[in-house]
Image (cartoon, rainbow, N blue to C red; front, side, top):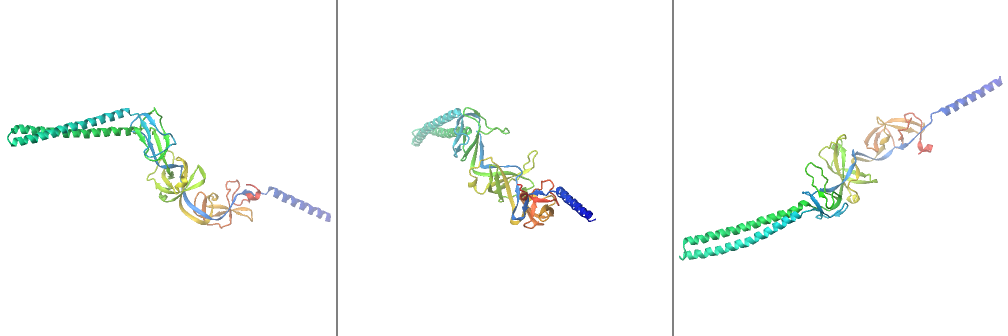
Length: 386
């Protein structure tokens, strides 16, 4: 009997060991998860542009001559820096120069005619005065005196007409001198040549209304830059001049530039197959830091609406639908669903008003399979994973 009991005990122990081994081998393995410790920090309410913005120049002009013609002089090349008033381009204008020469010669001829006509008028006036004296003394007839007075008046009128011809010739010469401005391009401000369309000897055509002909010269003033970015029409009422902005450029991924809203467009832009947007213009707070940036850089803007410097916060990516988070219970090694109340939020952080305390750890790797309330979990760093 004792032998039987001993064997039964041994069998039960072996069975218990097998059951324990089976449970151990078939138990659910804990899921390695990334955790974040809840702590205080800065949270901002911000707005971001819907599509990439662009670095623009405060002054930019696309120059074309008023008249078309063959390019005779091109004094710059793309990338050159120019000064205000510098001659950039000139078309062939020998015909205009000839017209100026004709107008100048006509002016000189008119001036000489003034000398001739006014000299004769002065002589006729003296003759009329002498004949008036002779008439008073009875040496000549009244008719002879009238004749000399009429002749003097006619000569004086001819003198005035000649002077008017001089004024007309001067106006004609001035008009001829203005004509070359229709075929020349002069820099209206200091800047950099961004684009030139045409070479010496080629024909340059100005852009007529309704025809998008490329300008002859594209001139930009890169000493003053700003960012123009489209914002969703729904966000437009929240944006006002003077608001603080963070500017991010693809060309400088590790650097933020401080900005201020300069202007909000007073109309909505509708682009086919895209959302309706409102253009916002943003100035760089420190122009010296924007020196050297290229016009045309793609840029993103983040407009600061409200800021709270030291509040309890969590990564926005940790939030699930219904304002829930998964809290890691280290003692039980399980995940617990927790409903929370949130405040300010942006794409990076969300303020926590209720439901969490500092020091608790929440799950970030929500995309992993099996990550759900009640699941067994272990912190990634504890498993040796990265």
